[in-house]
Amino acid sequence: MMTTKKLLSSMVVLGFMTAAGQVQAGCEDAPFGTQSFTICKVWPAYDDQTIVVTSTFKPDSADANNDGGNVDLELGLIQSSSSKRLASYRKKDAYYSDAVAYEGLAIDTARYKLTPDDRAFGIRSNFEHSSSVAPYHKTELALYLKQGDTLRPVLEGLVISTGRGEWDGHCAGQGEETQRTVDIGKTLHNGFADLVVSSTVTVTENFVVGEECQDTSKTSKTTRVTLSYDGKHYVVPEALKG
Image (tube, rainbow, N blue to C red; front, top):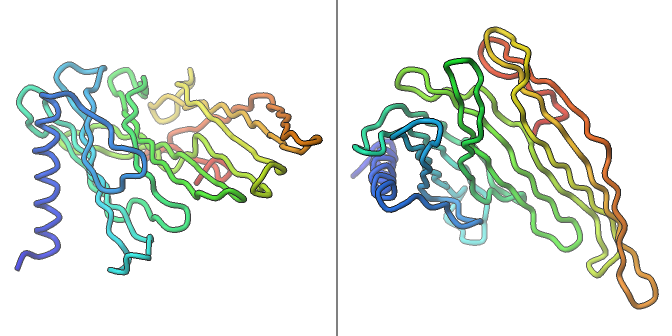
């Protein structure tokens, strides 16, 4: 009988083999709401390199009515032309899915140039609680840097978007949406550029006027927080965490 460790290893290898084929055919994102999948994306910053991500959902029990479970994360950097693995990273139980469900992830290849010689890529993980009266969703950003044959997380748990609200199920209620962007700062700490996180919050209120449902919204002024590298990772304040 194949052990759990060997089974997971075989799944990872299969995922990378699948991704290698996708590199030739064109990488595709997994559909929203998919929990187990392998996706890949060509890294524009580097010729002949492709980022591969495998997400493996492990349910808490065999009960089909139980949606809870953990998600293992496997990252890889491969040579596009040969499918040779250049670097990898694995994190067991990287995410947990329950009432706020893990809805998949996407590869982010924005210009995260942290040092003159080092560029990171991002993973954006999505979570959602579907409800007509108390909806909630969030997206978290993590950044990974290639060091030798490993991919090292240098930023984890930064919430870059979130939304929540309370509604009567028909019209009346109030919601709040937060959107954040990450830019490379001009200052350095421990040899790494600071990250400047800009946030805006939009509050929307719905109300009934006669027989119509109307709404008003107000967006706050942009606020900025600087994240500094402490020698191992970027320190994320509690207010910006998931």
